[in-house]
Image 1: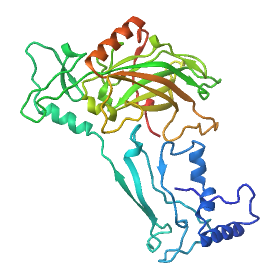
Image 2 (image 1 turned 30 degrees about the vertical axis):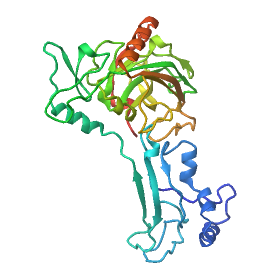
Image 3 (image 1 turned 90 degrees about the vertical axis):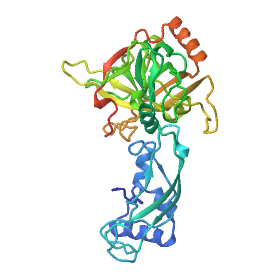
Length: 376
């Protein structure tokens, strides 16, 4: 990373030599805190310009660049000693505590480059093997009652006649009694604020596209059909930097057949895009928010409640930044509440309430281009 130790930028040194000498004095004193306080990468992360949502462990060693190719730590005079070799990591929404760094160190005796390498070790708590489960269930046999129509689901084949309840699989493998439900996810109070200018003349015409991780998880009940490849459920188009979508303009979501135990390891993705009203124009992505489908405080040892809510109020992120690099303004924020039902009785009640409220009636389906969730 080209991130320098920018010590002295607020009160510039008269010469690069004095700047270099001051950084060397801090290195000799072992004052890593003072050096990192002037670190450009830390400043960029704090401003939302890079690596938003990433974590980094504490650094307790000397800068690793720019050095002579020697087994000793000798800095070249033409560059300011800096922390240009870093280890950062990012976890999926809701899984931040599953990764913890156990060590971070530099290897000063390695002499193959003008960088000194760094090495880190981690402790990982594995989450539910979603893809593995899907493949095992599909190959494990899934014969149901004769005459029932069947649709492919994330973790096997689910009888459509049991959409609101659970279904058991039969087969020769170990999944002989795998309970699967189709939870409902209702998005309430969805609003965006302080959206960055996206149009040439200023302003923004936002709409929200909903996807999931894994992608196959999502089904739009508002449209009453399984989303085809390349499609996504979306809200209506609004105008302005601050907007709120009524519940009838936001998709009512049904998740495809999923084991209740696997639900907390899945994520809802909400992308805000700016509608381009120019003929043959392309809608521009503003940013994405990720929300884990689990209650606050949930742990691996906990059972999911029949229904629960997840509130979110998050900055929009595009690529690894939450700030528009041209204007320096934040991309905006997205907030709302997810109401999730996970058992047959709770799902039936949630669907009845949603129908009575007209939830999702004005929502729409859009063709999903790569730009909506692309990583730059």
